[in-house]
Image 1 (cartoon, rainbow, N blue to C red):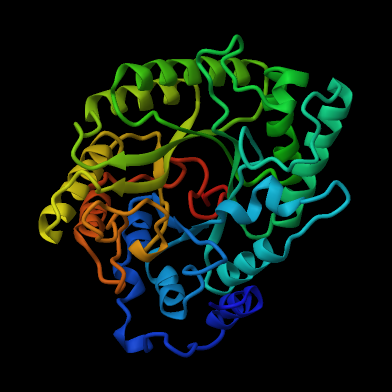
Image 2 (image 1 turned 60 degrees about the vertical axis):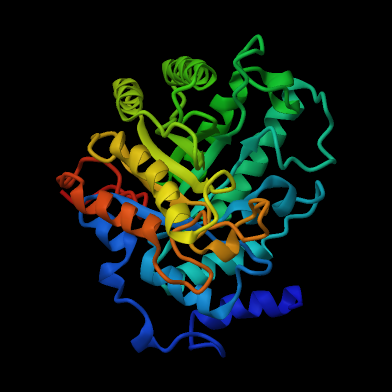
Length: 379
């Protein structure tokens, strides 16, 4: 198994030369045919998650990211527990490697989460005083965001913090216990102070289907987002984490369109994050399985692609070999992502490409931020 040092070196080396095992340039699809190029022509973006450990740093996989993506979701590399393992120590090595790789290929990072119920380091006490909690949260966010500001288009300021059954509608964390809903405001302001150009996003799972729990969660999130904006916090977008399930009733397009209407009425944009489709309930033969995966993504995109509030999409990974989903009962690996394990474009890739191709053209200035760069568009 490759060592951590070797994996980091692969990320660095892939940016400057063709590493051993990488496909020759002539065998790669032209960048202009990739998913981000198709999205960008309509004022949207496409990106995918890229980690540090195996299999993410395999040379042939790395060569495909510039061909297909405009953004890299940094995932665990920018999570609090990874980047500040001890109160006095910041560990930027992994994040810096991703940033360097992205920079050499004219890609941008989607960073975070900055405040979440998960991925908090063990050293954070469970019930800090409000003063200490505010100082800790502000200091961490400003340090991390400022460090990566040259490379980052979006920050997930808030992620997986929603709990509609809790008194405040927020999950219990050291920061929500100490600060309540003010924790969201503090995180937004700290991120904006450190990098005013990066898009500030609140991302939640479990909202893409139209079952009663998801609808209640959507309503709760919209109420909290409205209150956050009313308090003057600079929240800009909502991320819908799309962990889809093959074989179940697909997402309801009309319902998603109404959600975008509601978000847009608050002055918020909408994006998809973490797209992948669990195929364990689908047939074993690959054509049927790939078709069942595509059905889920097609329904999801149908409810979003034409809405003026929609910004773009981040997949959980680019290739099936990156997937962390569990195995199938028949022993076959899952096929939840746009490229297969041999990095061939699959039915899911085609579904996303067709959705981007069919999207209405967004004039410059709509959306107000360039979704790939996180910077104001030129007039």
